[in-house]
Image (tube, one colour):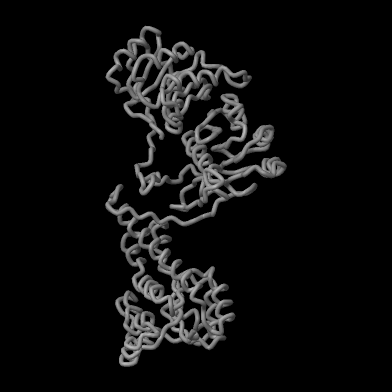
Amino acid sequence: MTKITRALISVSDKTGIIEFAQFLESQNIEIISTGGTYKAIKDAGIKVKDISEHTGFPEIMDGRVKTLHPKVHGGLLNVRDNAEHQKQKTENNITDIDLVVVNLYPFEETVKKGAEYDEVIENIDIGGPSMVRSAAKNHKFVTIVVDHNDYAEIQQNILDNKGNTTLELRKKLAYKAYSRTAEYDAHIAKWFANELNDLLPEKLTIPAKRKAVLRYGENSHQQAGAYILDDEIKSAVNAKIIQGKELSYNNILDADSALELVKEFEQPASVIVKHNNPCGVSVAENITKAYLQALGCDPVSAFGGIMAFNREVNKETAEEIAKIFAEVIIAPSYSREALEVFATKKNLRVLRTGDYRNSKNDKLTYRSINGGLLVQEYNGVVLDKNNLKIVTKRKPTDKEMEDLIFAFTICKHVKSNAIIYVKDQTTVGIGAGQMSRVDSTIIGAQKAERDNKNVPNTKGSVVASDAFFPFADGLLECVKNGVTAAIQPGGSIRDDDVIKAADENNIAMVFTGIRHFRH
């Protein structure tokens, strides 16, 4: 084991670097540095050598070339127990560099702030990743540090090992270093893809950062983790947990489904989700009423559900929620009084997203399959009633049209085959995930027949189907259940039969021209 004698430090994020440099100096480790890092260390009264003094070559081209030099990379890459390497090192006046501390130019932050093209390009780090990769490759002898959160562990490791680090630690740090450069390059590739409007690039790179190791996956015998693709997107995985146990894999899936659906509405809205399907959705003049109406759609399924809101949750709503068992609440914010109510429910997870009204969505959605990924464009379709096609003799009333659009919006978030019964901007029955569309119509109506005081049954409701009715039987089942209007994509070879059945039963029907399959 050889002592660390020389360190090279070049960091954009200078968190903790002065204290770390002071430690290195206390261990008689020579410090080499560059640019702003050199100045910060020198100004702190720590002995430090400028990179140009070490290489004998000036920084040139506005700092684009400063560490790309044989005295740097030879010092990093030489194999310490290789006689030929040592001979060449001596012949070329190269000295070992045993420890490298580098974090890269802030490319991601530069893109996020909306910088112009040229500024983004200048924040693509070249020398930093090169040093990281050289040091990590030669981790048998060299310690690479890319995260200030590791400084304390490295210091202790040096103290415990008489001036060196253990191979076990160096391997771990090398792994972390390559993960960081891979993430960095993925962000650059993603930026170029956006610049070129290449939605489905030939090589898909996904810069994902782990947020949490979860308690378990879909089932308790499966390990699972939560990863963030973009920390600016207001989402379930980015939400702040302000109360309750850690989230499970299924909690996050359900919270995501609930949140993405409640985001669809401008009016105060409430969504209740169970097993990744909504079991109640409503909009109203306030979220308390919206919640009670959503709950009334299927109060049995709502037990142990996930509740989402698009407004601040107040005390009155919190008191209503507290009357039943809920797993997760997700909303932009909460009043102090609401949080006091939730505090009495120790196992309830309370998630705060912050205001998401002007937040972006990722352009793509990802679905894992065994050995691969399925990638598709985010389904951001918003219906415009002026673009809908009325295909029946009777036109829908304004109120029916409002409910039809509301129902079809919900279809987007319900597993196919999806049938949604709606009255007064509230779901009265949801049929989801059935192999037969007719079965979905029957199940949705059956749920609506349950005894509840907040929501009427399907009589006088409208119905939405996520895909076309392939036969008239599905629509006729809805007619039997008392619907007055229907919305569906259209496009079946038997559309004429379905339209005829609607006309014979005085049903207004609208074609959207798009479907909302969700698998």
